[in-house]
Structure formats: structure tokens, C-alpha cells
Amino acid sequence: MFLSKHLKVFFVLGVLLATTFVLGVVDMYTQDDMPEEEVTVFNITMKDYQFVVEGQELNAPIQLEVGKPYTLHFIHEGADEHEVLIGEGAIEVAADIHHDFTTSLLEDVEVSIVGQMNDNDFVIGVPGLNEFEMNPGQELSISFTLPEDKIGDWEMGCFVYLDKEATEENPSPTHYDAGMHLTINVVAGE
Image: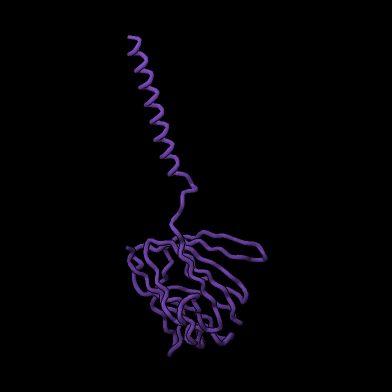
């Protein structure tokens, strides 16, 4: 009887210790500091009428894989204001003059925007992004993960008019028409 009571106590203690260990392991793997999937960063310098991707040949496409996190870090070294749109189907508004895309790549994708304004950093989370504008000397990063329905060929472009007086009713060629566009290939994940 005495041995039986002690065995029960040891059994209960063993179960409690095993449960505590298992819960500790589960808790260890659900902490916020768990390592996240590594983010791939593309550094893109915006010059007069071109996007230059660090480590790639000029005009070589950017390849993005669905399901993986990416950050596109933009550095504006051009003289003029630029805008960045990522989409497909450049709209021709007049002979060889393009303005906007028919479809935006990030329109329905969660995007985080990190930048600086008035010497202060800012972070914005948005449920989609159609375009953003940058002034000379600015830097800005956008981060996102693409879903499978985005597989295909897309394009990054700047549609600022070369003629500052141009309008949609009276368009002039744009930065896009002068060569400021870059192919983005979105491919299936492994």
C-alpha cells in the first residue's frame, strides 16, 4: 500500500513534468520572436528615365516568387519627381504615349510602406497599393508577399509627363515612354 501511494505520486509528478515540458516546447515555438522567413530585398535606384536594380544588368527583369516576402527599396537619384506604378497593360492615351496600367499588381495585396518625411521615419500598412510618388533625394521601401493569382508578367513604370504643362486631355510623352519601365516576372513558388 505504501509503495503504491508513492508510485502514484511519482506517476502524477512525472505527468505534470512531462506536461510542463510539452507546454514549454509549444510555447517556445509560438513566441513572437520566432524567426520569420527571410525577406528578399531589391534595391532600385530611380534615375532620369530608368529603374536600376542593384546587382542586375540594366533592364533585366525582376523575378518574384509567390508566397515569399519581398521588399523593394527605392532610392530617387533623378532630377525630376517620379511615380511608381506596378501593373500590366500600359494604357496608350495617344500615339505612343502611355499613362497608367489597366491592372495593378498590388491592388489587393497587403503592403507595408516604410519611408521618411520631414526627417521622421514612418511606417504605413495598407490593403493595396496602386502608386506612390517620390521627390529627388527620397528613399522609400514597400514590402509584400504575392498570392498565386499574381503569377504572370507585370511591369513597373513611371507615367509622369515629360512636359510639365501636359494633362490627360493634352498629353505629352511620359517617363515611361522615355524608357522608365521594368519587367517584373511573378513565378510559382517551390
